[in-house]
Image (cartoon, rainbow, N blue to C red; front, side):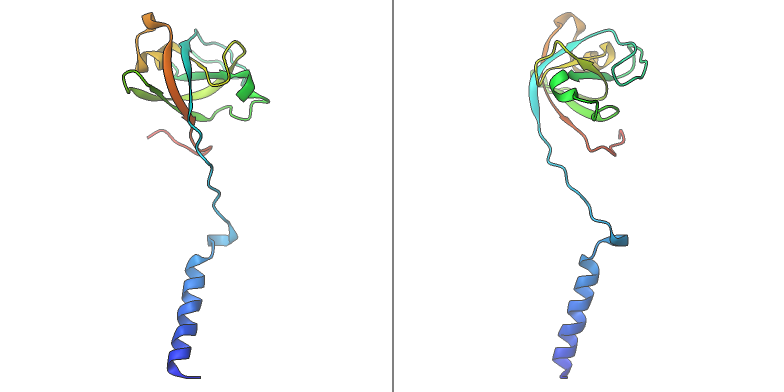
Length: 136
């Protein structure tokens, strides 16, 4: 075997080692879907996810269409007021049966991070963060 062939073979082995997943696991990327809808506010309490909250918690209720069986409970969402560009994170803890598919209902403190409670309704865009997201 020539030195060049041996070098190429060794290089190929090194490249395969770096391309292999660590500990036999693979990373899964989730496609981010950005939704646009109405954002309203409500006084929180015991939510559909089984947790009791207070109005100072940054809580989101999602439409029944998206809530389904509660698979998004405890998941963070990034929400932006499309009129002023303010954004904030909230945690899904409730279902909003009266919301349209992409509409959300927010705790007063979360709504106030985006706009004034007096407004009552905001146009928002939002997306779910990855399941393992931690607030910055």
